[in-house]
Length: 222
Image (cartoon, rainbow, N blue to C red):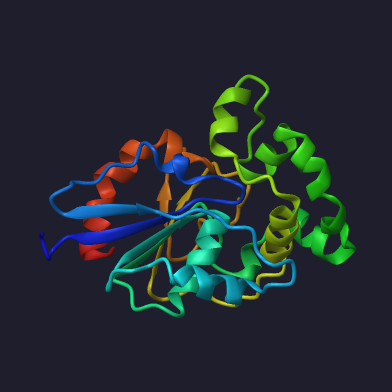
């Protein structure tokens, strides 16, 4: 067994399964990929508590943790309890100050409490919130990726996104964002690697960029 193998754990975005990483490939003589998936939380569970629980799935020391979208928020919380080799945050936000106004409005008005039930019944609504795209011509494709439709989970996830309280970006994180991201349009500023033309689902449709650049970013940082 190669003791120098770097273990890379991948966390998908809200409501998505680890299938979103199906096109991510790293050299097998250097890296081993492990896929994380969402579990239904206790309704009153805090994001911090959930993050601690998810840390139990990281079984290798000095691992790499990469999260997408809400998964990017989660891995930032997880990193506060782990000794990581590298933390990568993709298509997400660096602090609560990058939350789009439309999501901040859900917090102010309390409208987030009535949204999940409707979304569970309508894949297009869920895809628009999770991926930033309509799916009228790609229903079957998105059914493959959006598998966590439990209303308890969706209630919890939406609340934790809009009430996330991180004030500043993490110094140990590598933030990667697309300049065409419609879900989090304000996250390209500051200490961030910007992918030109990258959308919120660039881990799927720009996987080649990640396959070419992740090995270096993991081993060397920025």
